[in-house]
Image (cartoon, rainbow, N blue to C red; front, side):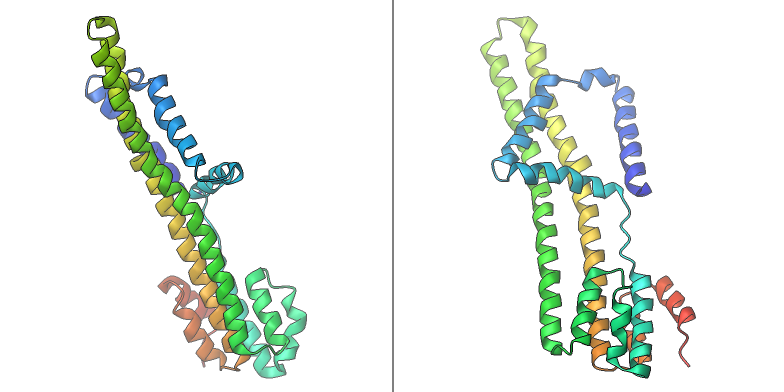
Amino acid sequence: MDLASIIGLAAGMFCIIASMYASGGVVTTYLDPASALMTIGGSFFALMLNYSIKEMLGMFNILGRAFKVPDFGEMKIAESLLSLSERARREGILSLEEEIESVDSAFMKRGLRMVVDSTDPEVIKSILETELSQMNERHGRWLKMIDQWAKLAPGMGMLGTVQGLIAMMKNLEDKSRIGPNMAVALITTYYGAMMANFLLTPMMGKLANHDAAETKVREMVIEGVLSIQQGDNPHILQMKLSSYLSPESQKKLEELHPQS
């Protein structure tokens, strides 16, 4: 689990609730079923107008990933690429065939298989880059969905505010309805702002970071696979791979594969 996301959600809720009491209110003051129905339900079904039911249900699984720490295995991949490079230099490209199945990364496995099959380097690069771009497109579509929801929620909140004010103005003679209508008018805007600024936009940012990290690892794989095919010295490959790693990972890779 991603502790940063969990702590951020829990601590953020604590700050919000504490501010309610600090301002003289209580939690129940801010609970209003009509406002929740308008803002949460209204924005969700408005979003459904633009997407399929399958995509809408899948979005909750995607949002859940904001609370998980992804492991793209960049260190393991870098070590594997270096080991394969060293073996290819000693025994030739075809010697890698028996090791391909032991590779965990399906993306890397496809690239190495094309190398063993003597596929043209430009073809390998084109295929792998196309697969990478398709992955980015899929991720981008999910991020766009979340971004649209983050924009629709405040909009539905404003719509609820107008709706509440209209109901209040039409029933000014009934003083018992002024309070409930004002609550709907104000709390819908509150809910919309909460959804967009406290939940959806930050979660979208976390998922965008995951996409960037996975993209970097796949770019490293492409660089490594092509380097192995063209017979680069493992030390050259190590320098190429290190550029994709953090300083801590670079140091660890250097310790595992010291350059002579």
